[in-house]
Image (cartoon, rainbow, N blue to C red; front, side):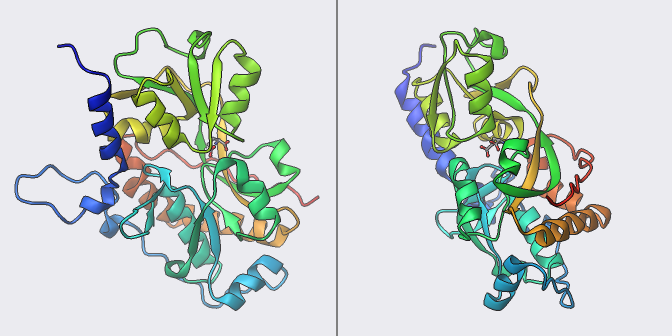
Length: 307
Ligand code: GLU
């Protein structure tokens, strides 16, 4: 059957914009099971009320105001998603932010989440707009010159998202002359630019804009981490698919102000504690695990020396 190009895409865009949480709890008899995060499946994080970290200026400020301010993403399914109706955030990165807050003595229910795009993360940490950042943030040496990283808490890899009817693109080697979309300031954007210069690369602030452009045939592929792309594909399985095998390693870290080593080490400890007590895996199963990949073993935490 011949399809018009625009009507189904427009419909899909509307569907993609409906957060899964909005339909949670509205299950009528006979309606399909809801695939969004189920609040009752999420871990309950015990707040460590005796915790203090007076050597950390970031922690002292947060403790005084009574909550952490955390930078996140709001358009990455199962990772960091904001429900436009309620303003509530959900996903694996959000859970990581919450477990860290509880271990550091501040009520996770009081966290103020702020959406920060990939290109603005370093500035937000440098100017004190946020205390820490949890949003598919790859640890690398260039970024370590600007910010500190606790973790990693998850290992992703760069991949490609195409329309289900795509036949030409099987991996990054097929991108010559193809329009490829990624986010400004991201490692996947940089890798395509350097390693696949024949691709016709375009950049936007967010991956969800890239996905809109893919659905409306403005671009041929979206590239970023498999964890992110799998979420978009899971929301529109008839229209989108992830191709090939991951072609990079993207260890996700928690960004902190560069000079606040006390905060960085305390977050490393918090991650280790939550991996050991089962919270990490429970949080994964209730969020990112919903896109179909069983919980991996978390990568070893890299407690690199201060300097
Ligand atoms: N993990 C990659 C990065 O930090 C891509 C995802 C993102 O832009 O957040 O650049």
